[in-house]
Length: 166
Image (cartoon, rainbow, N blue to C red; front, top):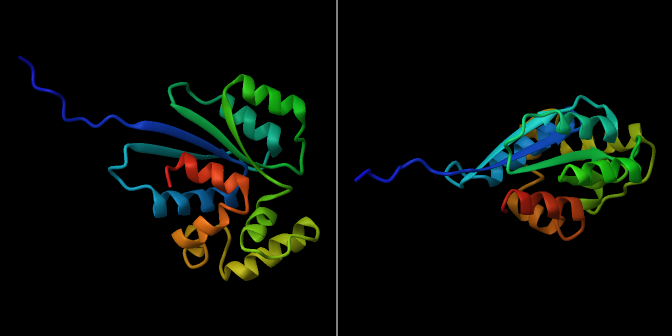
């Protein structure tokens, strides 16, 4: 009689992010919230700033075999019902940042999300106290406790944390 395999089965998750800042944040969440033996394997992929359509196209082009595929993108460029429909047809989970990543995280921290894109990025970087492209910059502000509070404010963060089993 064959011995049972000791190999652990994993659930696989692919998250395609719009750009470098989103990737840094996602890697922070992965490091903070997903234990090695959790049974969840996560790959974060960078779509390199191609807008909602580009992020979804990048996700569609990836090899099949992931249990779940999600896209994390800003809604300020080329986001519309046709793109949303296409993603849903491909069973891709949507994690939209309205209108952009920095605005969403500012709201999550109960800060103002008004201003143009550059103003939001500057305000967010100042609050973050470090380079938004550096995963470690998120450690002081986006703790487990803060994320639990933030998920009550931002649906996308709630959806993301559910995906990460947090």
